[in-house]
Length: 231
Image (tube, rainbow, N blue to C red; front, side, top):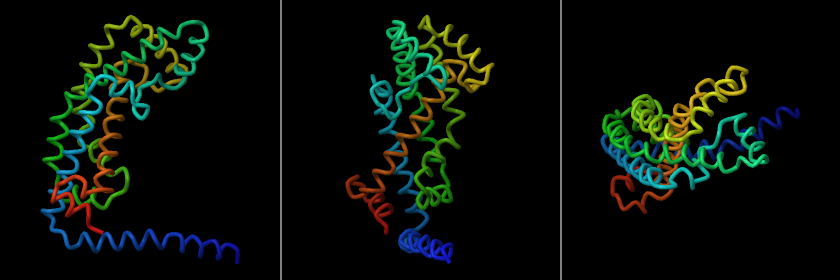
C-alpha cells in the first residue's frame, strides 16, 4: 500500500514535466527543419563566440571561479599543506600560469567551434533543441575535443614551460599517479591544463546557450526568437 502511494506521488510529480515536454514537442512540430537548424546554429555560434571572448582574455580563467583551474586531486591537498610551510607564493605562481595558459589557448579554438556549428546536421540541431541541459556541451565535446586539444596543447606547453615549477609538477604528479592518487592524464601539467581548458570552454558555451533559451527575445534575433521562443 505504501509503495503504491509513493508511486502515485512520484507520478504526480512527473506530470508537470511530461506536460511541458509534450507542449514543447507540439510547438516545435510547427517549426521547419530548416528553421530549427538555422536557429540552433545561430545560438551555438553566438554562444561559442561569447565564450571565447569571455575566457580568452586576461583573468578569463583565473578570475572566474566557475572555470578557475586549480591543482588536481591529491596535489591540491598537498598544496594546502605547502602553503602552511610558506610555499604559498610558489603555488599561486603555478596556478596563475596554468590559468593564463588556458586564456592564451582559447582564442585559437574559435574557428574550430564555428566550423563544427556550420557542419551540424538537422538531426544534431533537433537533438540540441529538444535535449537536456548538457546537449550543447555534449555536441561540442564530441565534435571538437580532439581537434581543439591538438590546437591548445602546444600553446599551453609553451606557456607553462616558462615556469620553473613545471618540471617539479610533472615529477610529483607522476609519483602520485603511480600510487593511484592521481589520474594518469593529469600527471603532465600541459595535458592537464589543456583538458581543463576544454572543460571550461564547453561549460561557458552551455551557459550562454541556456541564456538564449531563457530569453530568446533579448537576443534581438528573429530566428532565435522563433525557434527558442516556441513553447
